[in-house]
Length: 75
Image (tube, rainbow, N blue to C red; front, side, top):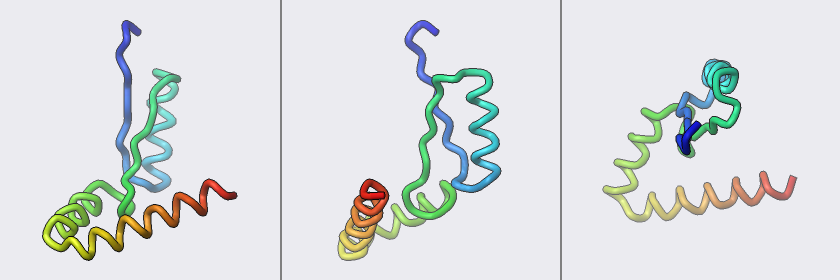
């Protein structure tokens, strides 16, 4: 594949899962980028804007993301 990397960025739902599976059928080495805030990329953009405007909200969101990562790793 000459060093090219394919990444999909579909919504974090069943349809997004299905679309990524279709990408994998064409390129099994493709990876998926998932939104970390909300179920779709519009939610991610809105949350990013809010966090840029309010540092305290950003701190709280980052703590929650870290807590969720720790829980998912410990499973």
